[in-house]
Image 1 (spheres, helix red, strand yellow):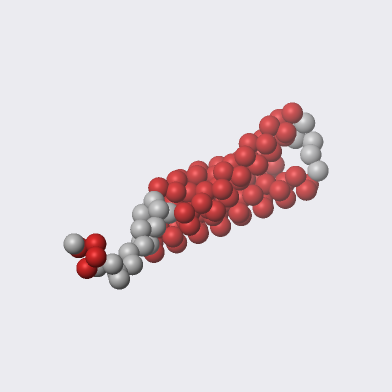
Image 2 (spheres, rainbow, N blue to C red):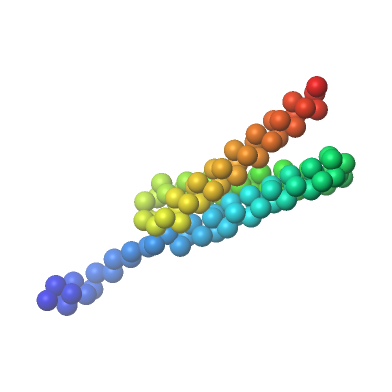
Length: 110
């Protein structure tokens, strides 16, 4: 009975599919970071500067994905786990990028 009476009310139960993009960005940034670390160990740090630029861009994309995921979470429209997973993955990726950047700065000074 209540289904017929309130049929005109459209309640959108969003499962958090909007966080899918941020989750993909975080995962790709983690994969790029892992690939750069493996390649730099294999080549013993003798890489062209463009490879460092790839790392910087990956870090910026990771911060952008974190920003987007936090904004989706603050809106309160999404109730899915993808947004929470995107915050976690992009946060971990951002922290790892920042730590490796600071470690590289400290090593280059010494």
